[in-house]
Length: 366
Image (cartoon, rainbow, N blue to C red; front, side, top):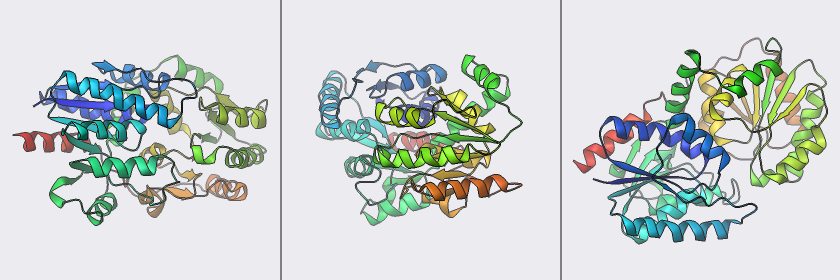
């Protein structure tokens, strides 16, 4: 049995690292390929989890469009699949990497396993292009590792056979617990130490992130207007600003120079987990944060009109506010005034996803 694990972005690397660990633990040989459609952010995670990269396509280029990126992934993956014989290709989630690698494997008639399968909004423009990437990857895949019951239900309704679906929980919880344990044992780095010096940890902290394409333009203007209004209160706002120039220009134009708004560079993964634990409220359009924050019982205001992660909304961990300035302000102030935000267990899993996935692989190929 020979396995190829493929990742392209920071979130993929975070969520695939526990699976790589588990494959190694169970002595199942695999090769790791990174397309590096995100370069700097991806490399940080690779280094933190000490993953060994066998193939690095190094495809990140400034301002490249999706068609150009897709064609490069498809072309270069074909060369890798031509150089070695693989029994299984594992991809993750909703990126251009996942859909194009799955397509390349399908063309070679190699089995495909989709991690974090079955999430849907059924709105092809939100999230864009991730919703269609997920659906395309799902159609190309042979085995579907669904993080939740509702994701499994989506797949069944789309005609996937029950025997090819496994409900695993989300492997981001595995990664989060690994990182939390390292932090508890004293792990630190220069970025964490800088945050300790920057922030007054005795005050309320709001953590803000944003990177979704569909919010570029008026959406981020509205979010920044909400942050400006919230900054008039006695609190601190920390905003690691995404590298996308269309995000950075709006954020720095609107929020630069305000004493209690800290605009910082994107954080490495352990530093972000450290900061997330300190926050009282998170405002974000990130899917991963919707999955991670419930572990620490931190509420998330989701600055999207729809989410493929409804479990968090239904359990009371997340709140869909879109990019409506008034909704963001009102809900944030409501949550800040609460003496305690206490909800049930994380609906996205208990941290056993990697073990379940690798056991499935082991049993199938046995």
